[in-house]
Length: 223
Picture 1 (cartoon, rainbow, N blue to C red):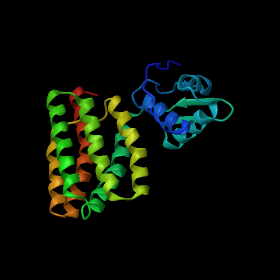
Picture 2 (cartoon, rainbow, N blue to C red):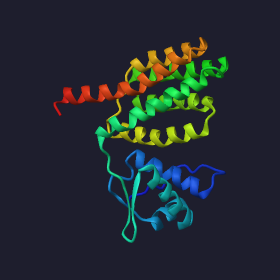
Picture 3 (tube, helix red, strand yellow):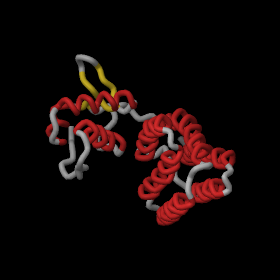
């Protein structure tokens, strides 16, 4: 099981949370590959923690659907099905729409201005073809909206689904286009107008459009 040794370790985080975040990142970016068996002792040694937080982290990842645990046999990374985009994005789009709706009456102009700057950076990354940077800017953009919805249960559900979206990006199911730049700006204008219906509608469309783009790419490739 190849494990990087040069990763940066966050400070002031519990061993379980640190283990969860790092193993999740390795699964998302493909460092730990689909169906790869996970050895808690090796992970514990690599992360400099005991086996207990590793096991706790793997249990959380099992609930999230990123690992499978087989009692008495072992734990392995789940498979990636590119077509699962059609299962992940509709509920995520609905949750993001709700977040936009809840945030609209209370989001400050200062936050809207910050989101506009993020969208500008997102646009630059898209135009340069730096899609990984664009992905991180897009994630930050939407996470701020979710935070402003001020609903921890909503935020938790979005976070779980978002992990799968990031993983699909690394396995080339998620395609970022400049259409999102315009949709982000439309969401911000809806915030400024305190138009929660429009904000919610565009937020939902922004996520669901990726499904059409995925299948359009499949048709172009002949798959």
